[in-house]
Length: 129
Image (cartoon, rainbow, N blue to C red):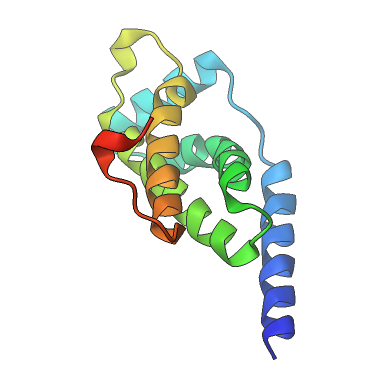
């Protein structure tokens, strides 16, 4: 029974990755225009376009921490998506950086935090390198 569940998770992840491969990465001017539309008018389609263009990065980083465990990968992707959403709310368009450059730190932070939940041995924060 567990084998079927793992297969379903793998199929779901493959379908998710296939859908993400169709999403276009935004150029700098497109990104700025969408952010202005989202912030000034509250355009949720613009927000969704910004998020979708960054989801591939979340999956890429999550793969590095999943170690071929599809169930863990699913949790790491969810955590990375949380970090992406937090970065979206905190991003300052006036600083002149790209959103993904800013959001990468939050994505990595949330994925690492989720990854540490899976570790058997807990290392105190002051002992981590």
